[in-house]
Length: 537
Image (cartoon, rainbow, N blue to C red; front, top):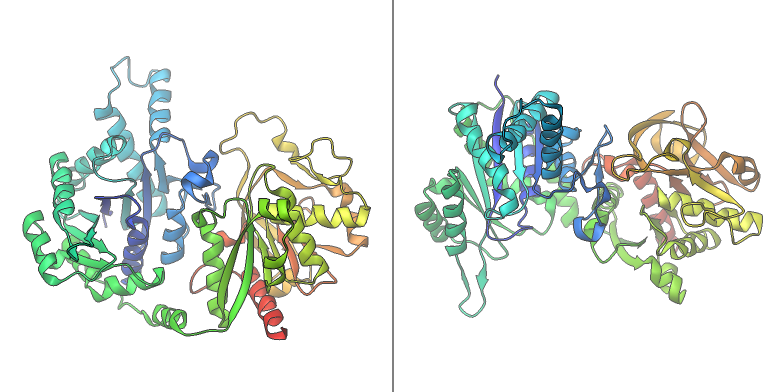
């Protein structure tokens, strides 16, 4: 069948929940037997989020093919349990770079390059490429930002053109909006939504569905008012009160009849009956009181929890799987550097050190690794967290506090972590790391092999530096086991300590492959070790 398109826009304010809404709708459609993909159109001029500050953008989510993408693609993959590709995240920077490249080659035969049709054509081309490359029968397309943002206008114009080009019944527009609450009168106001829809219609897009977000209950009377003033069917106005848990949202949309309404408007019939039992069971587990396990997350960007979105969700998935509640204490690594106040680490049942870049806060992460090793607290290090676990162990083994990574001390006498050889001549920072899915062979009998239950795995990477093999034997002799290697044995992918309840670091990012109903094995093993420590205390 021809691909059907569902376009999601946002109104009134940003961060209204379009990404989670798109992901939840994707789950509704997958439950009905359709193959789908989800694409994010980001209006910023950066080519991708790979070189953007986590404080501004949150985490960079890496796909199988190595694309560095918006964190919303993490929501898409987790909710729908699919793997997306680089064509599923489009930025203004990518679009303009491609159009300018074509102009320089002479592809436009000397014509004047304009936003319409050249930029909009490139946007539409990337939408169709995403549909073809994923084989999607239904492609959901989310536009970042808010209607009225000047940088988003070319994307909205492209979406307007898509309705005519896709053909009758092959496209549908969803507008996610916010109902502000006036504390003085205790009212929810629909006027900003009306203005937002008017702005959208002035561009030429009339929404087919309006999802009205609020922190307060929304009466049917308000939904009817929105339907009347925004010219949509009353049943196409979906009240969506802020949920206690993200993973409730597909169930709430199902209860509101959104799945059946979308299929009706697209002229489709469900192929399978939705089976929500696993999802309902998961949400029921979330609601149950569970014994707490204290996890200290030692990071550089902890002021913005979204910088560790996938890590946080992977911990939650693992905690649910073993019947505990993850209580995360967010510790800024620079605080450990300055004060060496170890009380928060002492209270932890497990210590997790995630990835990051740059010298700031590095010694604080090393403090966390040392404390975990000396006090036998379960430790999970991810990418940089693995590298600093190695640095800390090397300092103890070699008796030299100058052992380091050349990322932070190019003149270190013991560069136990060093720049990968194929990274040495690179000058561009964006998209040039070791990125995407690579195989890892596991050492039989290791903690990693027991956790995975297999001999070889595929995991997603994002790094420039690696373990320096010249130090492999001396650290092995001291008790470090390199339990995961590239198939040719050249690259260390997993390091663990033999004489420790659970101290393991991965060069890759396992958090990117964790799913709500299919938690990542290493997070489950880490959480189980943390639970055992909590029980023993």
